Image (cartoon, rainbow over all chains, first blue to last red; front, top):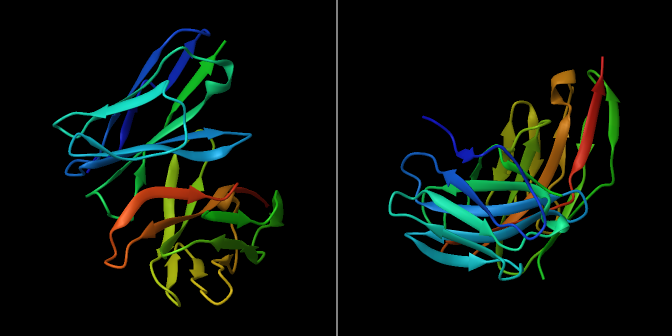
Length: 113
Length: 117
């Protein structure tokens, strides 16, 4: 069974631009969570989606948004990019909302110049 | 709030040495505990988990026991290999009394492990 896939793997943007990252969960998994990993702040939870609805949200500004499609694929969007948004963005899928085991993708490395 | 604290790294060991990485947590409710491993350039891989007090998670020679009385979940391995070199993260997720999680993993800061031949 294929794992979680994330596209693109690497991305370079400039300040003020916006970016969209994509995540395809493991087949049959219906819940997708997003995390930001930086050297300074470590791993921080962004949001969780299940059945196209945001179920939980972390403490990030409104520039960070996401959505989930009917096939469980998810996208996250960051608008008006700042230098501090440079990070590895990780997507994780789980079978259902409320399942405590999450499986991570390889991440998208975003660099903001 | 909920938090996870890991021992400061980096940890450097010789092959076949014994490994311990300490992890303590603060949480309300019913946390499940996890160890994830991250190899260079990759995402996180679930190494082991424990969902209730006194549970022992184990995988690939690694073990950790959920100790509610000391709020700890220390990772151990009896004999490390060079291939174990990676970053290790301790994490928790809260659940309600019925076992349904709230979906948010809280991570420790990570411990870099380097194993020399």
